[in-house]
Length: 167
Image (tube, rainbow, N blue to C red; front, side, top):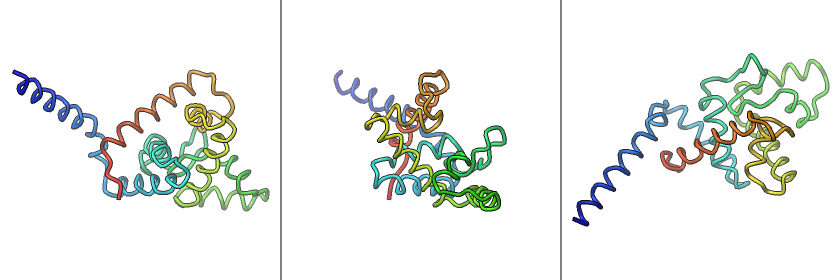
C-alpha cells in the first residue's frame, strides 16, 4: 500500500511539473537562449533568476520588445527615461540613438536593468520583494499594480527554476 501511495505521489508530481513547464517548453530555442543569457547576466549579482523572470514576463524572452503604451523597450522592458539617467545621456539626438539601440541590444538592456535592480536592492536593504516591485513601479510599491507584478515575477521564478536548464 505504501508503495502504491508513493507511486501515485510521483505520478502526480511529474504531471504537475509537465503542466507547469508547458509554456516554457513552447518557447523557441532563441527565446530559451535569451533566458539563459538573462540568468548569466544577473548571476554575478545574485539576480540570475530574477532577471530571467523579468525577461520572461516583460518581453516573453524577446518576443515583444516595444511597449507602445509605456515606452519601455527591449528584452527587460527598461524605461527609456531611466536608461537616459543611468547612462548620463542628455543630448536629444543621443537619447534617440540610445532608444533605438535599447530595443535589440540585449547586453545594453541587461546593463540598465541590472543597474535599476541593484539600485533598488540597495535602497530596500536587500529586500527582494520591494526591489522587484520597484523595478516595475519605481518608489510606488504600496499599490495593487506593484503587488501583482511581484506575484507574477515570483511565479515565473518558481516555474523557471523548475523547467529551465542552466549551462
